[in-house]
Amino acid sequence: MSKEHTDMPKDKGLDHTLQLLKEGYFFIMNRKDKYDSRIFETKLLGEKAICLIGKEEAALFYNNDKFSRKGAAPGRIQKTLFGQGGVQGLDGEEHHHRKAMFMSLMTKEHLSEIQNMTKEEWRKELNNQSEEVNVYNTSKLILTRLALRFTGVPFKEEEAEQWVDELSDMFENAADIGPKHWKARMSRNKAEDWMMDLVERVRNREVQVNQNRALHQFSFHTDLQGELLDKKIVAVELLNLLRPIVAIAVYVDFLVLALHDYPEEVEKLKDSDKEKLLHFVQEVRRYYPFFPFTTARVKESFDWNGYNFKEGTLVLLDLYGTNHDPALWSNPGQFYPDRFEEWQASPFDFIPQGGGEFDIGHRCAGEWITIDILKETLDYFVNEISFEFPTQDFKFSMNDIPALPESKVEIRNIKVK
Image (cartoon, rainbow, N blue to C red; front, side, top):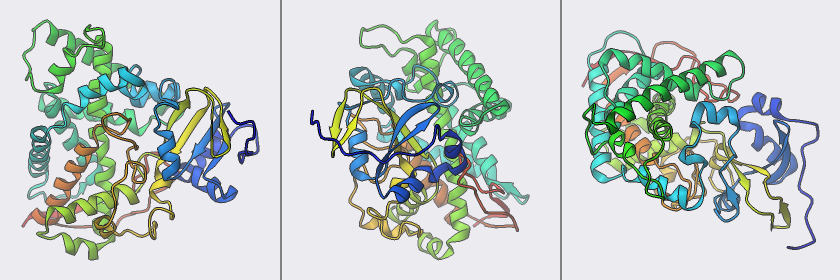
């Protein structure tokens, strides 16, 4: 190890957790500009943290030899958003083996099912709906039904609303403090308990489920020692499929907002090919806020570009900031879907749901599901129905996580074309 180190820019003050909550998605970007550096040190929740932004920095962050995900996410996030013992907190062969369980669902056949289910659910809910519709709330209901169907979790129609509430709590209130946070923890505990009981009944053959669905496959998945996963772990991983699918409602809301804000781009989508739809979806995912950052810890001390990374240090990678990095994206503050016609696909510059490689890295296994759901939703809104936007407040705050338009986007007078 080199003895010559470059001093890392450092946030002054005892702790910057409150500033993070106040500045939201801009926290790391603001300091990148302040220090003119893509790497700096701060203190969050009482501990030292290194913040990174950019493509090279993302490539470093997703180097599995240098960083570990185990113990990186704050306990309050594990107990609401991710669950404890899930794939996001694993490393090495254990991570690879567990992630393969998820990737086995990303076949062409399964993704085709997702596409068909998406259109079915939108048509069922909105076709010829003349009353005013809240896009975000409706999306959560539609995506909850879709998620339960896709994973093979049995449910009655009247139970879907309860699932919406519990799954929404896990991502809407994960970063909150006080009553909302405790409500999120209660929702997760309740959902995990129900799912553990269901897994037990599936294993005992007391309930018959589709063997090609995640519920059956996860229930009988074995670990590296050939033992069935603990039923609590199975419950956590099933919720790690259900909860992210419902969270796509955030993107759906921004997708419909983009239809309002950029009508000139919408004209290009009418009866267009799938590539135009894909480019619009990708620009929504790049342009609008979703995850602010992701976390890891340094495995063993090392030097990089003269900076010393000490073993055990918490590290944050700015996802939103990297997607708006002017060194990577021309006019990043402009909504311009056609930029993806020339984009040279990289696992480290376009990272709305995390970066790295799918198979050996920590890139979100459900990213393909997200893209397919959004493409089918976009096609439905542009080419299958017409609707109006009533007067409303479209503004959204970058301090809220997740950020959402104040009105959650309202539409009315929906008619099938």
